[in-house]
Image: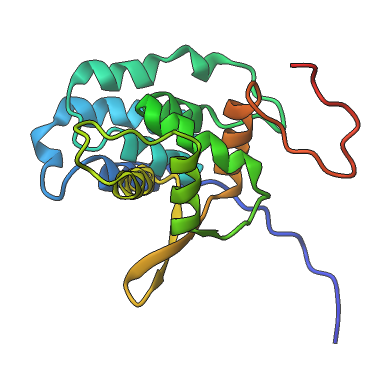
Length: 205
């Protein structure tokens, strides 16, 4: 039998659940009680995430083990929260997390924009690409570039920018969330553009 039923409107997480999620990703286990000032600022930060779990988790990850109050205040008071949000705009929380990454990670992250949404990445393929493009540099000359590139992947994962698939406990494949992909497209727009048969206009630059 078939019939119509009322639509179910999905809502964001409650403020309490957002704070629990934020605390889980921002603090080491058992350390939250040592930093009451950071927790109070964290409450104000999660309010601005509008109940979006990915935004809460990503911002929490970006502040993990960084207990300098100035960093937390900077995130809370950043002007990006005040920008007018349009329907297809990127989430301010994700842009803030991106801005706090080291430049080497930001360059590598932007190349996710060259792939379609829901693309399954093979770790070795993306690390070889980064190395070939000259985006991976050895600090002391003794490290293998492929190992450094893998460290970049692990760092992006720790910041909640990747979603690994476990294969016999060896994470060889990953995806990026649609909202994270939107962020990659946004930050790469001055460098590159992906085109298909529906593309009508390509910026001159």
